[in-house]
Image 1 (tube, rainbow, N blue to C red):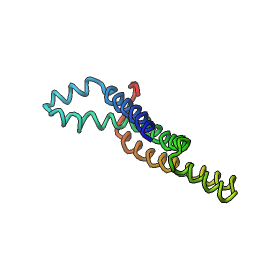
Image 2 (cartoon, one colour; image 1 turned 30 degrees about the horizontal axis):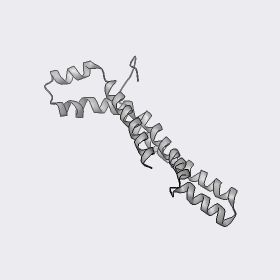
Image 3 (tube, rainbow, N blue to C red; image 1 turned 45 degrees about the vertical axis):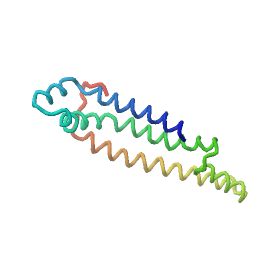
Image 4 (cartoon, rainbow, N blue to C red; image 1 turned 135 degrees about the vertical axis):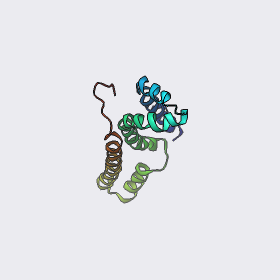
Length: 134
């Protein structure tokens, strides 16, 4: 779990760093010229624009994290795949158990995807990225 957490944290940190770095320097300069404090610049100018840029890759990262958690079960950490193995071994209903486990993972990923698509639409509805590198 610790390794998956560190790897995921590194990817998420890079996504956030790239999102903030993608904000044009004109936006930073405009906020400074308005006399905003550093915290106000980030709060009202930088973070809203960066959030619109980082939500799509974060969505993919979170869904990958859910899927990668099943790989962690190979290292004998009890979670959904491990419980599925136990149920399949004890009941003898191997195919049915794995279909059910796959269905639960599908529901988890679908729920995350729908929820984060909603967040993405809410954050990007006011921004136009014509000619901007996303």
